[in-house]
Image 1 (cartoon, one colour):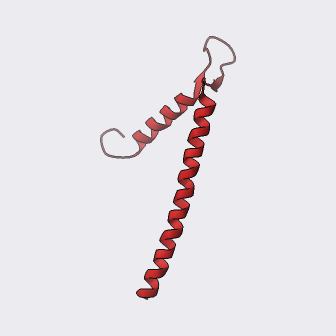
Image 2 (image 1 turned 135 degrees about the horizontal axis):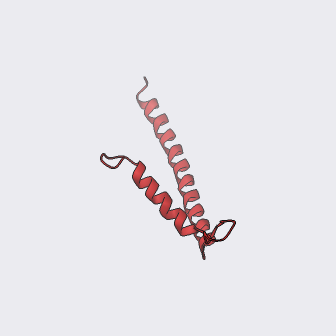
Image 3 (image 1 turned 120 degrees about the vertical axis):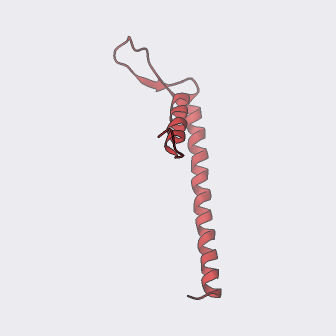
Length: 79
């Protein structure tokens, strides 16, 4: 995992970073142990969701453009 190029380690690192910026674990000496929002964690989560939602919309638009280009190419160069 660490000795050849792959995407697993960066994805795990980014996931841990994002999770630790939003949530925190309550005091381990108290029962029950809770996972709760950090101060400002809800706002961070909302911003990340809106940013990722915008990326999804942009990817959908890019897919439509690619389909149009494929259609034009197929008209010019029939198979």
